[in-house]
Image (tube, rainbow, N blue to C red; front, side, top):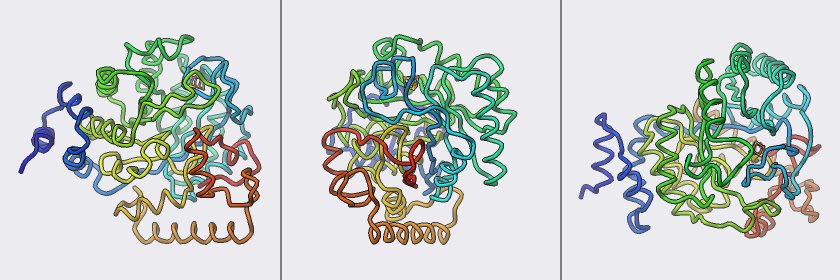
Length: 389
Ligand code: SF4
């Protein structure tokens, strides 16, 4: 039997486009029909991306201490979340962290700094880091995410070899002022425009679970379509204690899959990245979500810990995916290297902050922590502990 989602996929594959009503229908799919929607959206994913998954790696260059008041952010002005706080990593520290992610399987490094926007000296640092990174790792893609850009800064990044610029719209314009007051939706659109004009690949996405309505999620997705963002990170709110959204739990695993499915119908040929909150909110549906999304972050997020990098890679392989840009045998070798390293960690004890010598990816402790909220990152950038990559 052909479902209406199949008919929608047929229409899109023959050059049509999803409408607002189609998007709302995908978002409101009854759970018992979810797999029909996933199968139909999965046809679009496979048409454009086959069985590849793009693997990205975050390096938080400067953490916390932000003067902006984005209510959802653990690094914001007024946030009491006990996240790592540090000023700019040095070039060598950045190379070390980025190298860990690239050896771990990533092909894109996303260099992120907290703050309203970069100074010219900040741009100098990122220019130097980018050039060193490109010298050391041939073919690496670099995405910068430094906040609101001033005139000329995007051009400087482009000239230095930066490939993409991330600046999320985060939510619908109609919801924006409820989540941040220190800058406007138009400020954000302006920066995405500056990045595009300079020839940087625009990366812009959203955060679900901020109290938005279904219509506002659809509004945000169509705004991203209009912006023609090449990559669309879909974040699921991680409600950090000590932020205005603490104890805000609006999402379920099936809801998250529906959001990603809707994103695929609306933006069929764009990189849809499952971003922060993947493990916490999708839980056992992470692999199902990859049937419609085609991109993830490996390992940890900016201020919180993701699941063990080996678990990420095994999930991809177990479900028949390959890493974009890596052949199958190299992928197998990568997994074996991770397994050997994990075995070494267990044998020697890792001295992780859980205090039980259980390994920094301790399944028991992580499960416990995730019931309570995000696990604050205590490894990788800004620490002396090895990165999760
Ligand atoms: S999202 Fe960015 S600009 Fe907003 S508070 Fe967090 S670090 Fe600052």
